[in-house]
Amino acid sequence: MARAKRTARADARRRYRAEQTFAEAAVDDEPVEETTPRREHAPVTAAVLGEPGARRGFMAAFRESFRPLDVRGDLEALPGIAIRTRALWLPILLTLASTAIFAAVRPINPLTLFLFQYFVVTPAIGSVFIAGFMSPRASWLLGAIVGLVSAACSAFLEIAGYVPVPTNGVAPQPQDIVIAAVSISPVLGALFASLAAWYRRFLQLMNPNRGRPRSTGSGGRRADGKSRSTGARQKAPSRR
Image (cartoon, rainbow, N blue to C red; front, side):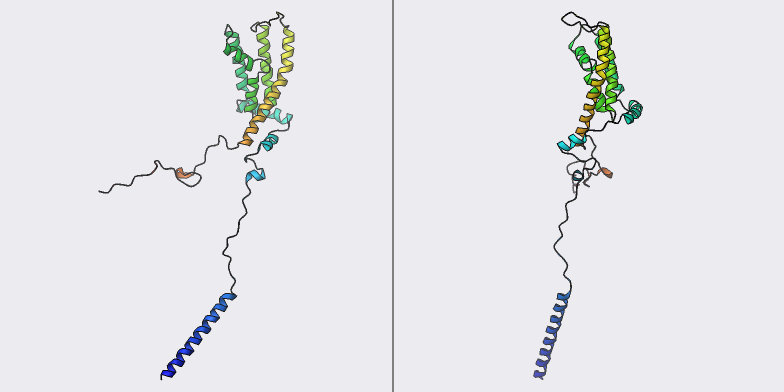
């Protein structure tokens, strides 16, 4: 009886070992899944692709700030620029106001001399710079118009005798003053206004996010998903 039990136990152990060997062989035949995470490629940013709105390097911003001259398109866009923006009437208003102040305030003081030098005298550097910097396009055209206005104001002040006579005592002839102002001021005004527009584009390409408000989600959440708390940490209610 005891011998029969030992034989049965030995047969059970052999069957168990056979089943384990079969199970291990079946597991070895199955495909092994990759446990090591694959390395993802770094995303291509907008700066690499050169997309609009991406920050440029110095040389790239320097080259991309130049714009080809489009005379016909600028002439067509001039009425809209003059109506919808302040790029034309604001510098003209500054030139006219400076002319009136220089003619009214006597004797000449540092303030009136400053206004005369930067907003009246050919090519009215302050006025044409404002026109070129604020203009969305056609900056050269706005600079030429502002230059003509400043030439007329400068010629008026000199012919009317508001400008002191040079130290040598020789006053220029009125026709010479008008010809010099009208021929030089529009050209220089267009040049300085174009440089101002180029400088504005250069700054925008170097720092495109300057002046943009930070985006926040609904409920006062920031772009990173975190909500703005009113305090550093809310106090827990005291237990009674």
